[in-house]
Image 1 (cartoon, rainbow over the protein chains, first blue to last red):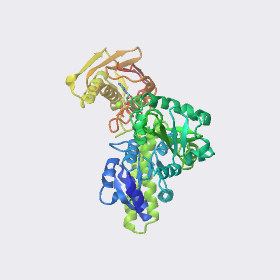
Image 2 (image 1 turned 90 degrees about the horizontal axis):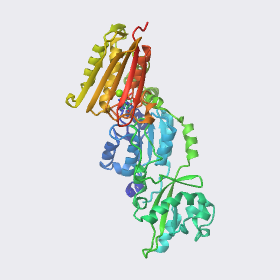
Image 3 (image 1 turned 90 degrees about the vertical axis):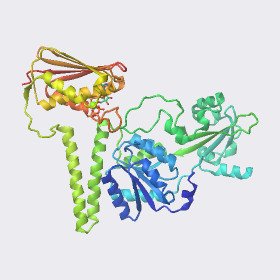
Image 4 (image 1 turned 135 degrees about the vertical axis):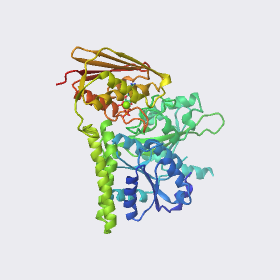
Length: 140
Length: 375
Ligand SMILES: Nc1ncnc2c1ncn2[C@@H]1O[C@H](COP(=O)(O)OP(=O)(O)OP(=O)(O)O)[C@@H](O)[C@H]1O
Ligand SMILES: [Mg+2]
């Protein structure tokens, strides 16, 4: 589980999961302006599909996701991602400023919970911090 | 080999303990020692009850389960899986439909030890000669207090009710588009791009303006509708027709009980809206099968309309919330939870009142009273 992406050390890409195109676009603009490569998906399922394409599984180093989207709701999406891409750090960027939900998600392994409209500078700062942080030791 | 395994176990950052059948400690690793601020060997052979009474207490029911059935799900399910299915402490999307409560696996999602919160995994550590040895691995999740602090710094607020959650959801996406495009403009010199971004900002601002209008005004569309004296029977009949559009009439019975009625003074569209919303809810609650009865009668200075269905009914704990904006038990894309809120606003606007009675499983009755001479 996750051995390869953990040791590869190539963490250039960021996967954005967000159903609203406008929001995806902003995240992409911000991240690309800081030199990150971005892959987009409209929901958790598509994200996992895309993740499996080419070298994406190796190269995606961070997942940024909303928590309310069609097909899979956000909380399920997190669980789904934790199951299918267990070693990828996850950041939530969402419209709900809800502490209880945030705590609960962070206990599920979400690294950051940012509330829209998050400012560019803060977003980039958090992304950098999460990417720099050593990945958690996973045991099975 | 055994030496190597032991070294690994000793040094992983997760807390690992091995117990005998009576919850006596057989092994703990360095992570546990560090947490308890003691050397690991001080724990070998000690009863857990002496080491940490509170932790002993929270583990006791879990041990009892394992003793009763060594194949108990808590022994074999991975922690992610169990987290996803266990009841109780769980992350919930505040706008997701409220699901039926109660769950097969009622084991706690996390364990607390010395003020830290851990996800956990039991495993069979027995040597296979009959003695049951129970292993427990604990993986620390961030300290709750620390989390709270971090979140308050990032501007999150607690205790969001449904209204705020709904508004937040609807507004924050376009707001993010606005601030984001504005920031992009600040970093951009190409006039074409700047204009494109400005266009986006205008679009998102309009979207917000529309949400605000929807929420406050109900001045949908023209806004020049005038009050008229309206025949209630006609209004009720056309509202039924509209509500029925999405349902199969063969499986539905609509009972109408109209006593002679005085006209009501209202904006026709608004009056109709009150009843289409109520009828739609009733039909949805019956899943398209059952009886919708509409009773209209005079009350002296006004009229009363009772809308009764034979549907699922409303559970007691939701009764006080159904009129709140964005409160819905329907799946995403099926309900926004504004229907009853609009109904109540309109009814109040005409000086009337709305009441609800319901027993789960036995349908619901909504009674609307409206005065006949509102001015
Ligand atoms: N006749 C009814 N029987 C059972 N439950 C009802 C009935 N009417 C309303 N409810 C409950 O009240 C909730 C709120 O109703 P409301 O009409 O405000 O929103 P909605 O129907 O979920 O969504 P919308 O009307 O915006 O499409 C419903 O989700 C449902 O749980
Ligand atoms: Mg409704």
